[in-house]
Length: 77
Length: 131
Image (cartoon, rainbow over all chains, first blue to last red; front, side):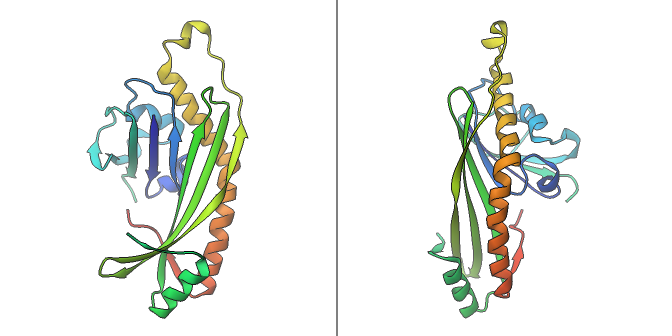
């Protein structure tokens, strides 16, 4: 599974992603959701305004499959 | 499709000739891991670009030297091994991010600083890529 992650606003300073777009390869974990990434990314659910998965609005319970492109937008920018 | 330049200097000359004063600088990093997750390889690039209007865009891409690091893969208890795919994926992500921040981020940061310096010296200002 390959996930490309980018963050916006203050998350560029506070998250583990930083200002660069990161593309990471992960072992296939059936049913992995967006929410399951947050702890490793150092992103708090409460600070998120919007999540975009493969160009579309997504929920934290959205499942990640194959190649996914994920963007996190914070509430305060 | 952006027109690509072979060097930052060529891009700067083109921008100066067209009286463009602003550029964006974006970094992209890709990691790959060995099957066991012990070996992580990083490959990065910095993209300097500018929109010239009417859909025309110019770019220079600086490829950054690939970097490989070894990490200690966690040995999960046998009982957990088959049921913890999610946990393994989370740990793999955490390992890649930790290695990125501790080892590769400085490498990509140094390249970004050099390019930023050259752009500023040429009178170009850097704006954040649009969200």
